[in-house]
View 1 (cartoon, rainbow, N blue to C red):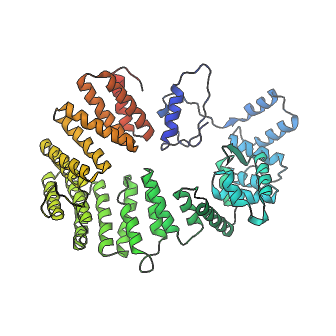
View 2: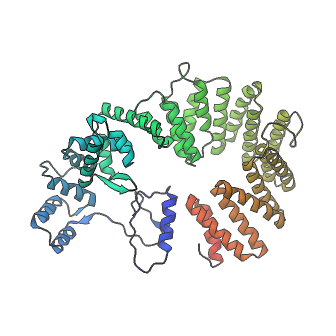
Length: 530
C-alpha cells in the first residue's frame, strides 16, 4: 500500500511501475492513495475505490454472519445515503459503538472531531496533542520525549496512553518504532482542537526537542519555530530554504525564503545583510511563471529596505528572473543597475557574475554579438587584460563557458570549442569538480556536432563518470542520451540500448518527462523495453 502518491513523488511512482511490470506466480493487489485523478502514468488498468454502496455493506455483513446489533448499527450509519465513503463509515460506526448521542450526519471534519471528543482518557488527550504537533507520522522516541513530564505524565503513563490510542484506532503502530494517525482527517482534527496558547507552547517544546536531539531536518525545525513564534524563526526559515534547494525542491525553497523575508523585521531594526542573502537566493530557484511573478513582487518590495551592495544583489536576482521570463530588456536594465555598486566596491567575483548573466541574457535574446562583446569586456576588466588563461584567484570556468555558449548560439562551433577548452583548463587549474563535469559535457556535445565522434566519446564518458560520482542524476540522464547517440553512430547497439535504458530509469526517478519519453521512443524503435 502506497499513501499520498502525487506527481512529485517520483520515487513511489517508479517503484509502482517496476512492481507492475515484475513477473509473479501469484496475483498481487497493490493499493495507492492519491488526490490526482489521472493514473495514465502507470500504463496499466487502474480500478478506483470510491464510495461503497449501502446494499453491498449490508450484504457483506449478512454473509459474514455478523451479530444483529452490528447490522443495525451499520444500517443506522448508512441510512442517509445509498453510498458512503469508507472513512465516513468507519467514523460513524466507532461513534455509535462508543455510545455517542450526537448527530452523525455532519461533514467528515466534524465527525473526526466528534470521534476524538469521545476519547475519555486525559492522558491519551495529552499524548494526542503532542503527536498532532509533531506530525502525521512520529517516532515513539520523539513522542515519549515530548510528552513525558508534560502535565505530570511519566513515561509509564505515556506508554499506556499510546496503547489506548492504538486500540481506539486513532494513533496506530506503524512499525520501525513509529506511529501514525489512522487518517489525515484525524490528524487535522487533533491539531485544530488544541487551544491556540497551548499549541504555541507545544511547538516551543517541539523546537527544544529539535535542538536537543538533532534528529529533525531544517524544514521541520522551521515549521516549529514559525508556529512557536520564536524570535529566530526567520533564520530557521532561511536555513530550511537552503536545505530545500540542496534537495532540488526549488518551489519549497522559494516558499521558505519568502516566509523568512515576511517574518524578518525590516531595517533599521532588522539585519539588512540577512535580508539581502535571502532575497538574492530567490533569483537562483527554477520556478514556474506564476511563482516567478510572486517572487518578483516580493523582491521589488525588498528594494525599499536596501541600498548599495544589498540593493545590487536584489537587482541581480530580479535580472535572473526577468531572463527566465523572457523579458530581456528588463533583465539588461536590472544587471546594469547591479553593476555600478559592485564595481565600485571592487568585488571582482561579483562583477564576473553580473557580466556572465548579462551575456547569457543577450544570448537568449538572440543578440550573440552583443553577448560576446559584454563577456569579453567583463573578462578584461576582472583579469586586467590577461584573458582566459589568466592565473588568478577567481573561479573563471563558469564565465568562460558562458562565452562558449554565446559562440555556440551563433553557430561558431570552432570558437565555442576554444573557449570551452579554456574553461576546462581553468577548472583543472583550480581543481573544481563541477567545472570539470560541465566543461567535459559541453565539449562532448561540441565534438559530436563537429563530427569528431571519438573525441566526443572521451569527453562524454568523463562527464558521465563525474556525474555518477557526485550523484547528479539529471546530468547523468542527459549524458546517457548523448552516449546513446554516439553509440548509434558507431553501430554499437548494445551500448546504445544500455544507455537508453539507464537514461529512461533515471528520467522516471527524476520526473523528467521529456527525457523519459525520448529514451522510450528510441528503445521502442530498437524493439527494446526499459
